[in-house]
Structures are given as C-alpha cells and as structure tokens.
Image 1 (cartoon, rainbow, N blue to C red):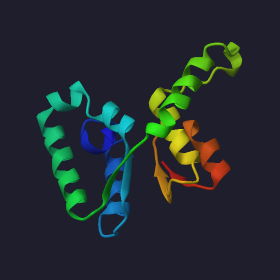
Image 2: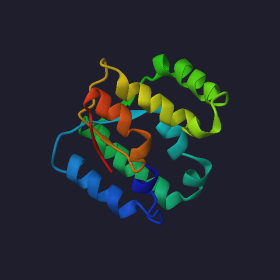
Image 3: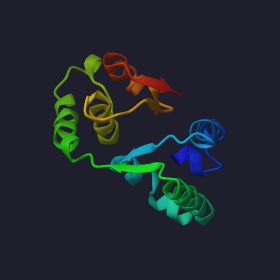
Length: 140
C-alpha cells in the first residue's frame, strides 16, 4: 500500500497499474489485514499530506463501491508472534527474517477460512511458498 499512495516510491507506477487492473472497472474486493495499515499509515505517511489525501480519496471510493474489507486478524497474531520469536533460536543459515506483519499475512494466506483469490505483493520471496502450498495466485 505504501507504493500505491506514495508517488515518490519506486514501486508507485507498478502499484498504481495493479490497482487499476484489479479495482478500476472490476468489482473485486480489497482485503486488508490490520498490520498492513499499521505499516502503511505511518508517521511518515500522515506527515506527507498529499499522499495521505490520496489514500483517503482512494479508500472512500473503495468503501463507496463495497470494495474494501478490513480483515480481523486476531486469530493469527499470537502464532505469528511466537514464530517471530522462535526464529532467534534457529541456526543463522536457517534464519528467516520475516516481519510480524509478514507472518500475520502468511497465516491469513494459509487459512482455508479466508477467501483470497489474488495476493498482490512486491516481496514475493516472503510469500511464494505459502501461496503455492494452498494454491493462491500471487502477482508482484
């Protein structure tokens, strides 16, 4: 989401193209887990008023068209935190530097109870294994 609403971000044009493709004229729904919001709507974002206004405008449009769902990720938080802390005891060559946000998202993606038809990310290496495992389509 940072790339979508921050015009100075290197990934902005790709993010905008994906957004246009999947949410422009097609009634898809964007599912956003709360950790994504915590990372995206940061102090930096809210201080850059132009970018924050773009996010506000985009979200208002998605909501008006019923295309925005904020996902309750409560059931994934504790196990994601446990996974993060368990990484410390792994040998350095097996250490996987995944953020808590990424681990929550991996839990969401792995869950059969969550309907996700397409996952958009610019960090495919962090999610390709779980997407393959459960047959989720991923684009980057």
